Each structure stands twice: as structure tokens, then as C-alpha cells.
Image (cartoon, rainbow, N blue to C red; front, side, top):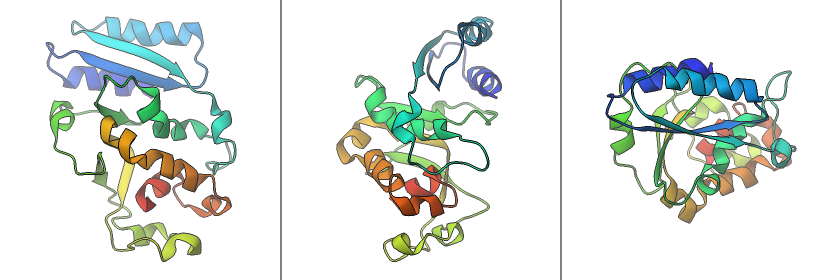
Length: 191
């Protein structure tokens, strides 16, 4: 999935735009890293890539997905601290996305004071559809729009100041977070 997402992101951009990729993983082999680099080398356009191996130990108490442990999804919450402070703007992409048009407009879109831009989830358009657990229900506006966290535009400087992702991580560490229907996506929406 990551290869298709990367290739479609590169193809969607004009050739003269440099694509900087921060690839989060939890233990790619050297052969797998070389496969990603070879894919990007096939394009005429310049792409710079940094691989960031994430130690999943810091997410051990977090809700697990379905039958298997998919803790790497929580790595997006580390981005404000993980990425160099010279980077102010970032587009986060889940690896199950196929990019059909240029990401350039997203990179330049105006964001509000939270520093996060996202798309409304079509299946669950408001927080009410996520059915927040009783510990949260009275603290969130159930009619507020609900977004999908698979595509996020992030103002990292604002996120470093308001610590929104850190607040989300603290929320996810609570025992009742096991009740969150969509785990980190739920936590981000509640925060």
C-alpha cells in the first residue's frame, strides 16, 4: 500500500516540485527500504525521503485494532516532535490512499488555530456517529463534524505550541480509550 500511495503522490505533483517524504515504519528491512528508494528513483522529479523507525513501546496501553495489533497508526501523533522544526507544514497520508490530483493545493491551504486540516468522514459525518463513551460524551459537542484522520494537513508549528497531539496521546492512554470506536481517529476528533 505504501508504494502505491507514494507513487500516486509523486505522479500527482508537477515535475518541478520537490516532494519531501517522512516515511514512518516499525522495522523495515534494508531490502524493503531499497525497494521504496528504487520506486522513487524511477520518477524524473526530485523526491527526498527520510525513514523514521518508530518504537511502538510508547503505545503499549493504547487500544488495539481488531484481532491484530496495528499500533503504527499512532505514530502520526509523534509528528510535531519527530519532524525537524524547520518543517512547518506537512500532509499526512495513510498508506491505503491513492492520490488522484495534486497535493500542492493542500500544502498551501489556510488552516485554523488548531493547525489541523481534515476531510469530513462520509460514513460518520458527526461525532454522534462515533458514539463517544460515557467518560467523554458530556465533554464533546456530539453534533460537531467528524473527520477522517487518514489525510491530514498539519501546521507543525501550531501543533507544537498547542500540544493537541500530546493531549490526544494522553486521552488514548486512559483505560476507557479501549471503548473508542476508531481509536486515534476518535481521540483526535474528541480533542
